[in-house]
Structure formats: structure tokens, C-alpha cells
Length: 259
Image (cartoon, rainbow, N blue to C red; front, top):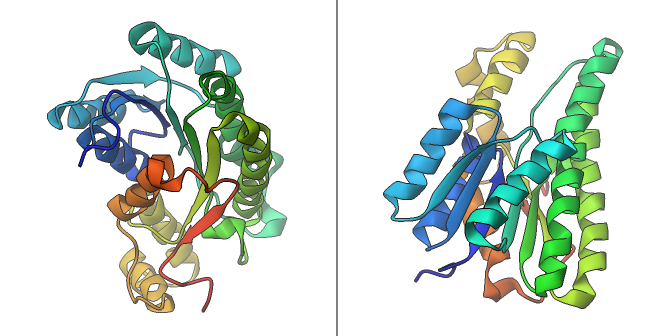
């Protein structure tokens, strides 16, 4: 069943990982997909994957920390397709340093991309959805937005902020019809998590593979998530099946927070 025929989906961080998986998922369900990322090569590959699904797709270079860059992308999407129905704010980075080693630059860059970037994209798209009295915003938080661990101050702070921002956006949009929700993935097999495994694993005296296996063993389901599994929840939150669900932060973590 194609749930998003003729709808337009705007996805930040579409070049890799969960963002790319979401782009391909929406394309397969009939949406027209705008892929936004600074990584031009991989972003174009993501758009090509969407076209392979039979969908129309755009690959737009966008810096989510810059209001003008976001607005330029929004204007291009509206010029081509005359609407935006769904925003998936997926662009993000991970930085993990012990508290006394976190520089102001690392702190600020993490918040600029992970939190301010979500704010600016929400701010650009929410008025369009409210005017249309329909649509959805799905913001990517993390299990780190609900819990934390050592050497993750900037990342956890940014992802907690995404949850608070999402709740506020949901309350503003609710009287007009659109919804806003956050998704909080657990460890997911993306390039970002593999890079984390190299960095954190080394600090713990482990290889990247050993670190990933340890994290999988921590999870009640004894495995890490695949990006397509997170994309499935994102597509649900954009569908008609979730019209009465807003302001939530859904844990998609295999039960790791419960454990």
C-alpha cells in the first residue's frame, strides 16, 4: 500500500543512515522526496535511490545551521512541487568527550547541528503545514535524549533539547491539524554509530566490532537496530494512522532504556 502518493517529504540528513533509509521508505510509498544534506555526493546517491523506487526526488545542498540555506531549500521545493507535507529533521552528529575535555567549539557545533538545525527547519516548515491544516513533523532525537552516560554531555543535551522543542512545536500546531513527534532510536547500524564504535571502543580498550557487540548485548533484543526499522516508525508518524498522536518522543531502542 502506498500511503504517501502525491505528498512531498523534506528530509534533512538524507545522505546517510536513518535519513537515507527514511527517504527510500517514503519514495517506495509514493512520495516525492527532497533530500537535504551538505554531503553532495552521498545526498545525490540517496535521491537516485528514491528515483529507483519510481519516485520524483530532489538532491539539495543544505546547511541546517543556516536559516538562509534552509529557506532556499524550502523555496526550491515549493517552486517545484508547490507543497510540503512532511518534514523529517534527521541531520545530526555525535561527539563524545569526557566533560573536562569538551571544548566550547565542540559543544557549540553539536548544539548548532543537532538542536538549532532542528529548530530552524521546524520554524521554516511549521507555518506551511498550519496553513494547509495537515501534515507532520518528525524530529530525530535519541535514547540519549531520555537517558545518558559518561562522555556524552553535548550530545545528550542536544537530543534532550529536541524532545522539548518537539513538544512545543506540537502544541503550537495542534489547533491547526498538523502533528509533531520525536523518534528516539537506540544504537543503530549507521556510519555515525560505526564511527562512535571506533572512537569510544578505542578509549575502552576495545575494537569497533567488540564495542558494537557489547552494545548489542546490552539490549534486551541482543542486537542493534537497522536504519530501515527506524524509517518504518518515521513513516508511521507521517501516516493517517497516527493523526491523533502528537508531542510524543517514541523510544525505538529494543528495550534498552527499560533495562
